[in-house]
Amino acid sequence: MNTTFTYANGSVQLHRWPLHQPNSSLQAWDAADELLLEHTFIAAKQFIDQHQRAPILLLINDSFGALSCALAEFTQIQINDSVLAELGSRHNRQQNNLGLSNLRQQSSLDSYPQQPDIVLLKLPNNHSYLQYILQQLASVVSTDTVILASAKAKDISRNVLAKFHHTLGPASASLTVKKCRLIQCQFNPQLARTEQEQFPLRWPLEQSSFKLLNHANVFSREKLDQGARFFLQHLPTLESGQSVIDLGCGNGVLGLVMLAQQPQISLLFCDESYMAVDSARMSIAENLPHLMPQCQFVVDDCLSQQSDRSADIIVCNPPFHQQHAVTSHIASQMFSEAKRVLKQGGRLRIVANRHLGYAELLKRLFGNCHQLAADPKFIILDVIKRS
Image (cartoon, rainbow, N blue to C red; front, side, top):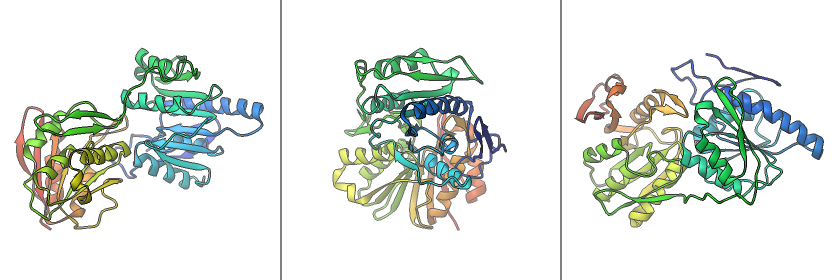
């Protein structure tokens, strides 16, 4: 595993979060980080020469703190939608003895800081979330703000550059370096906010009277995804008084339907995304406001904040990617944590793509696994914690 991130001004040790991931080939940085850093150090030197002070940096989507660590000499505000990114950044800063005194971390839903000197943006692969970010920046940057963004070259399309142009101002992309490109954008207040999208989005849940609310960075933002649609046909039968968890809740559609079917339960909505958990909260508040006292909404690294043997039922539609990387470790962590948190006799039920092989993983972990249903793309798996 390569953990030494070397850049123009030095090197740091970086690990992906959560730690101890099985795919040791995945690094905690990429060439897009290197490209951003190269241009940031140049911009920072020019800023210091001109203003006789160090710049204040705004870092957006710094997944594991590569940018934060390399630029630790500068005051930073770091914005992420994932609590995993926050935890990874803090871990990597501390293991490199960089401290946290000049780092302020904010969630994706917090107000962006006014007039940052340099903005560094790792482009998200979700274009709705990119549009949200650009709209937030348009309300806080100035014409003097240096705006830099980077991603793999294949992800910087004409459409992406048009979003910058119509929301912030003129933008250009560099030539490809190590399969990545850099975007430089000049804020023009006369162009700003001409391309406004409304966030969050509200849309009707099919075959129901419910309306779901989705923030910009929530999976399947504009319609019900196929896996959730199939899962809704095979939700567990719940009893009054049970403690239920919607793990990886997204917009909360599974929990919403379960709560409507059995109002006498306590229900925890949990996700690593701030926008997902807030979408679930708004979906319940919109449709079942009288049941809000029975619900908790928690942003968490899996179920790390939950007590052992505390839940009767856990439902989960697990992801099989982290940021841009396809990986099974998140689902594996979810299943292990579910086993810890379930009471004896408790039940975990999941929906998954057929090709992922989760049945064998669950059987090894729980000693049992029953396939309840299948269609050409998805399967419903059910396990019971026997000990």
